[in-house]
Image (tube, rainbow over all chains, first blue to last red; front, side, top):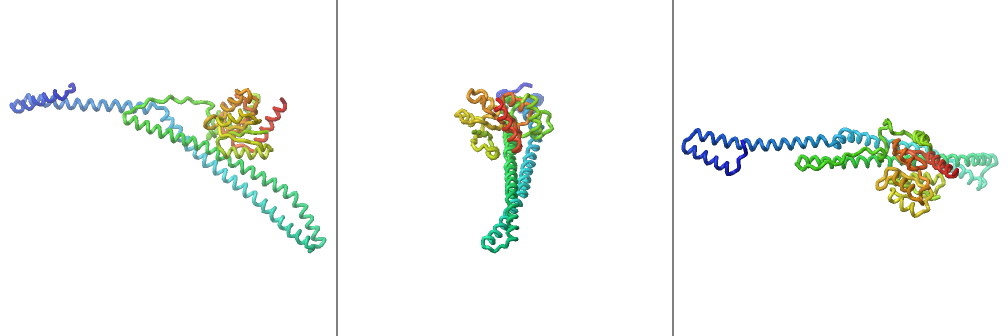
Amino acid sequence: MEYLNNNELLDVARDLVLALETNDEKQAQIHLADLTQAQESDLFHEVGTLTRELHESLNNFNVDPKLINMAQHDMPDTRARLNFVIKTTEEAAHNTLELIDKTLPLSDSLKDTAQKIEDSWHRFRMREMGVEEFRTLSNEIESYMPNVKIHADQIHENLQEITLAQGFQDLTGQVIRQVISLVGEVENNLVELVKIAGKHKTENKDGNKADLIKAEGPQIDKTKANVVNNQDEVDDLLSSLGF
Amino acid sequence: MKILVVDDFSTMRRIIKNLLRDLGFTNTTEADDGLTAMPILQAGGIDFLVTDWNMPGMQGIDLLKAVRADENLSHLPVLMVTAETKREQIIEAAQAGVNGYIVKPFTAGTLKEKIDKIFERIDAG
């Protein structure tokens, strides 16, 4: 049954009223059926439209590889990345604290010995020291000097290692930036989804081609085949290239 | 000997500068990506470039290529210090003419070794 416009509906309605007034039951039934059918046809039309739109929306949802990739790959990857951040900052903090633990006794021992020598030296200046005691002091000073150098070198080395340990800020910063950018992408895609649901379909973006040399920051999964794990492997690869 | 250190993280620039100072290179200057590094390099007076790879603006690999393409800078020694560890990337850097490639996290010893090696090669001609 085709769709009836307003005037046609009005005509059918008038015919129905007329049939009822003239007690023409048969005609009344026919007109009533016409009206019901017209209404049903309208409903079917609307349901059809909705179904088609829903189908298209679902199709769009399915074919957007970016979303699927995000759910299947980026999200678990992000969890691994954030765990990497925890692990790296934890290691750096422990590393730094350990080096401080190693350094403090060195400076303490330097200070204690210096204090002892200073006291003795003061007594020597005040002529309160016998020959035997002075000999001991002299030995103490003699062994202290090289110790100062050894300790100072060790302290320097420890401080240098503490400096290097701060590299975690760069490594984790790169990873956190990636997570921020992913969160931004998820947000954009959710907006797209809302738009699709709101029947304002936007055209698909270009598929992103994997760029082999694109900067990726620290590799979280070190088992990947095309990733080197340490400086030695970098050196080996470069020397294989004639470096 | 004046060294330009390029990294977008100020902490890493500071670390590298401290280590270079320990190695006797006290004259260093900084830039936070390739775009800010290029004018400093073009102004002249830089003898050695240490650069990160992954930076906003202009990446280290593009900075390396720009340096090699600039006739005044093409012979500048370039040492990459980066967290990028894919084989394709290392090969790309080598082909673009990098003089040394250090992966983060690195040690003071590695930095010294690579710098020494670069200078040995330069001295050998």
